Image (cartoon, rainbow, N blue to C red; front, top):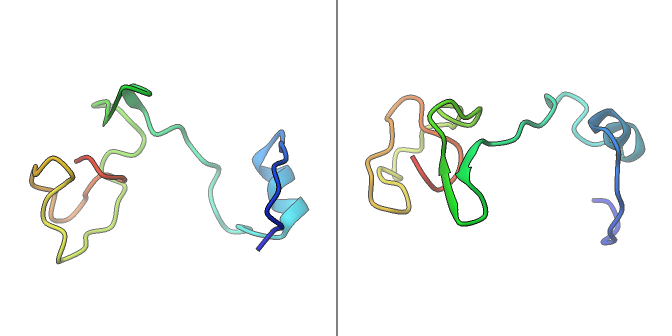
Length: 78
């Protein structure tokens, strides 16, 4: 892992080249929160909607809402 220090990287490719990590990872996307930092639920058209991986033993989100069984959203909220 990189050393524990704070540094700013202007682009995703700069980070990949500087660290050697995440070579095959796609460019990060903003998750699309409704109204960060107070409302971290995902907006209907958010990039993170439906992009998670189903986990059998996690049936509900942090609020108790049922998660999609085949295409859950990323994060704590469904």
